[in-house]
Image (cartoon, rainbow, N blue to C red; front, side):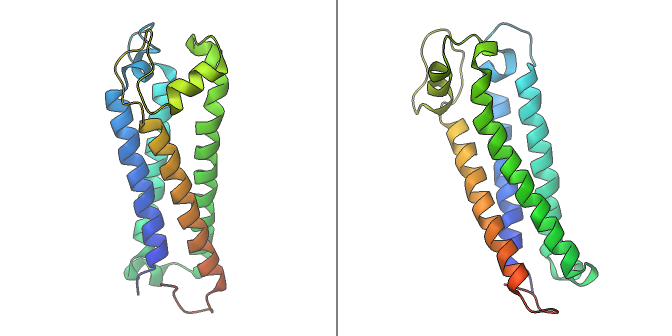
Length: 167
């Protein structure tokens, strides 16, 4: 039987990937450091790297949850893979929250101003190129949901009797 929680965990990483790709394609500020450099700015590459990790982790979890792979992988290996994916979700959330400390590198006059740019539901005004203002919020919320589902999947795996699959 398919491990539905692990499958959901993997699919959520793929949702995180899609949100990141939309952000990479639409956020001209992320691409050019607010117009000060030619595409592509280092933070754009960072989001791309996170998206690649999301793709790899998401596909690994999806594939590990299908019955044919479940039978080939030990329960211990599946639990370790889920734990590693949880660790990645925690790191991704930490990166997204921690990037606020980069405000001075991006030409903002204060951390609060950068937070308003990142987390504000409406476009930030002065000197900002085109972007979708709520994408950063959506990606952070998606990672939080991904983490919560991953923790549930991990706890259900840990509690399952040997030789059975949690659903």
